[in-house]
Length: 537
Image 1: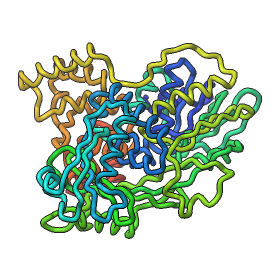
Image 2 (image 1 turned 45 degrees about the vertical axis):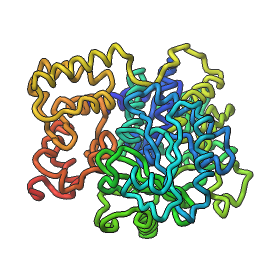
Image 3 (image 1 turned 120 degrees about the horizontal axis):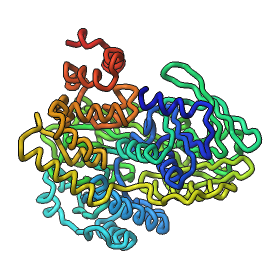
Image 4 (image 1 turned 180 degrees about the horizontal axis):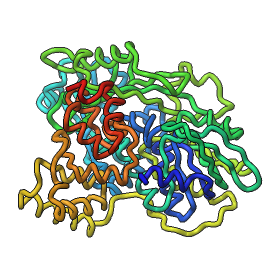
């Protein structure tokens, strides 16, 4: 049986301590924390893991320097602390990156004010990153020629962190870590009904891949559905004290605009900050902050025009960026936590809404709800949800509290030694990015290079774009629960965001499908590319 089929069979008619609904960053962190604590845990999502908001963030792990403008010093301090913990726990995955903030002459803040704010930010972050720098217009032009320094007061440079391989890959790694601790994880399962009887919830689930229905029982439900948390609360008949206001943020993916690995930051014409962020070998430009009524929204013409007009006005390019330069688009919906007693939050004060998270416990319904939240504070969310679940008369199994982070130095050292031998002996066909293997698969990467050593055929590079070998694809097939080709191209890797469909289509991608999907290879290829392999070639 495939891994998904195995987990689905364990879920069907199973009894669990906790069922987590939603496998975005909040759900993945909660499931890993709960499973490592020793609670019988299940995690389901109506889409793929990280299949909605958590695949469309800025990929930044940051303390939120812009929240200083609304005097949320406690929030910034907490987020910076969370950022620092993530950088220590994931030294190759979450890395410090410099931000070069070009302050235009019409910006709402002066260059000096931003510089002083950057120092305050550095202190609130316990001085764990490189110190801020103040740059004149001439220094800015020397440091970053692509920025049109003539329209600026100069710049401020400071540090935060980013996810090297993207947000969705990070979430999927947390899901894998939860599964390794015994959590039953199944994607593409939609909750259609939930009823509480006695000490248990009975939850009915619909498999969107084949239309089949299964049921599971759990003592506690964790509502981690992100922007869909309010509908899930209605489905479970839980009266929450909080609700979500939704904000759309979009990014346009283009070729890299700057040679150094840094984030370019600007104030847009309306005073909102926006960024040019490295994304693999590309650049991600955004983001907007627009109120929307429903979670299902897309990038529209106004979004594209806003981003392109603002970035073109601030860069010194040979020719302005146009829609033909856009390789891909990212559109995410941020769920912002709002007290139900507050009204008028989608109006003029929308941009000042707090980005904090709230964990709400409903003891009478044995339910825990997560409102708000960011990638940066995922560890706090996981720990707080675990504590909230245990407060519901749940016996604490007393398992390990270490539910996140990369493997220790001993395993990494063994991996690097094996990788070095393979590179020195030139026994790998094609260029294999061993560092990426470690970032994406952690201790499983050691087993992969050991297999490279023993089975030469597994070293063959199938996709030259990312140096993806047949052995890596077999590892993904066995452990990553990939159901559709988009799962692999969009969430397990960055391929669909860094290469066009025409670049990806072809014999190599058909080989990928054959390894990942077996007899369904042609179906999955056609599902993604809109034509059969023979039709496209």
